[in-house]
Length: 238
Image (cartoon, rainbow, N blue to C red; front, side):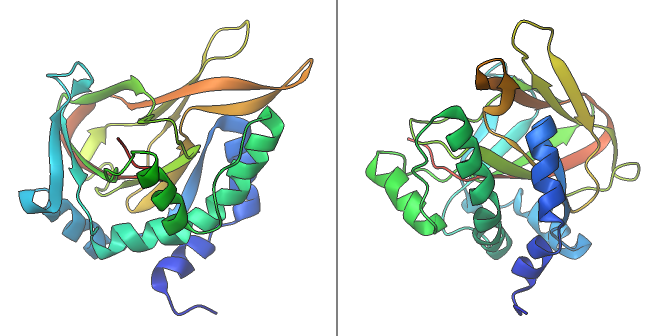
């Protein structure tokens, strides 16, 4: 068994069940990926501007209310190691979706090689995000599409304890179904657990085989307290 604690945490999940859930709903809960102490250390990084390449005021850009920061590279160890451990687990799902939707599957076996492909295509800006929500903040429904090269799955980790550090701030998925009203899924993310979800759409069965159902994600209004989340996106930005 691997002695890499990041890999062990990722591998502790029931990945057959996780794949089935993300195939069905567009999102799936992951096991605990951080300890409370590690989560606290990542939260504290928010007050260290030198760790980040840029800061986004969501209200200014009409993305919602609140603020987030894009990490610069090299990433802090938990960010880098979790991305490296998660990528091979997400890859079979990504490739399966590409086959069903008749799309190219350009993703190589290694994350570093994929990111080099992004850089060669002009997408060289790191996209791991640390988000901070105060009471009254929220995140509008959106998709994290930065350029032509896209990895179809991403992960978010709640760095605060629901019911203790904050109330509200549920994670939202809204799926646009063909010729039908949209479907919403609401998840209160447990402390230190990951949540896997689609970056842009998921394959659904149709009369002609498979079609793509667009999915957007967001965060409901934080009713009290403070909530930090770590967002792991597996493609870089222009």
